[in-house]
Length: 288
Image (tube, rainbow, N blue to C red; front, side, top):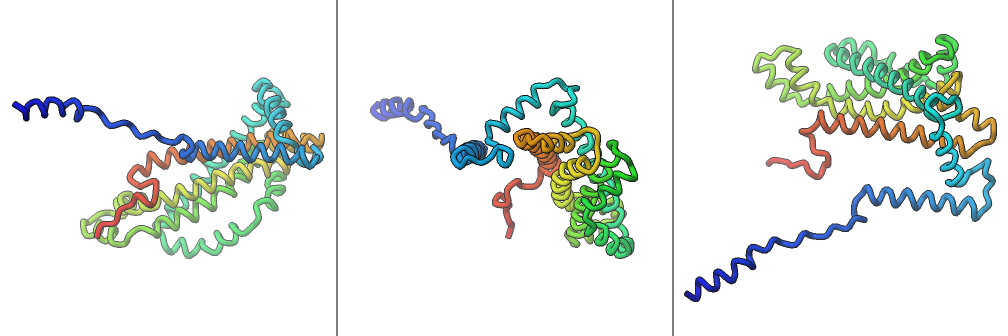
């Protein structure tokens, strides 16, 4: 009887769920990143006003915010707004990124399957990669004109080589034991490529695509600096001619947002494709 009473009294105590642990919101890396950005912008604003730096040299953050608001508040087809010029620059970036990255990946696949072709093209790839693309940009504009085609060609030159080099390195990094195992199972060269080489090269390919994404934004602006009729690079030149440093910085903010959006989209695709790969190296386990 006493045992039954004790068990009945202890039952409600055992049924109580444990209290959830309170998490500190400041421990989140995203929150810390936002706080760091606010601190840096506040320090920038305070330093410019405290030391009375001329606005045409370094504008305060408030001027950049006002210029950014004015540029975004215009209509999508306004020739002096950010939407019109940003759309043209974004189209150049996407076209150049996909065309240059696609060609680099395709040639990397072909070269990885033909070692003799790799040895033949290696000195030419090294020579072309060492040529400064900024120096070639005026020639490309002369050849293709001031339209979008010259900017796409410049972006292709900047995005082609990172994807090509990293893809070739990825195809070489495949474990030889996996290839030997597939050959012992009478696998065809296409099956070996699809089952072993391409999955092993995917991390390298995405690393090259991430570099190409940053280079594509740079290539678009460089092409528009050399010669263009519209685009964010043209808008920067116009604002610098008017000594509007706040507007120039605001355009740079828009370019940064485009680069961040493109990199984030690539990261999401990478997480979907490489779902089998741990996001953090500390999560990897080693079986002994």
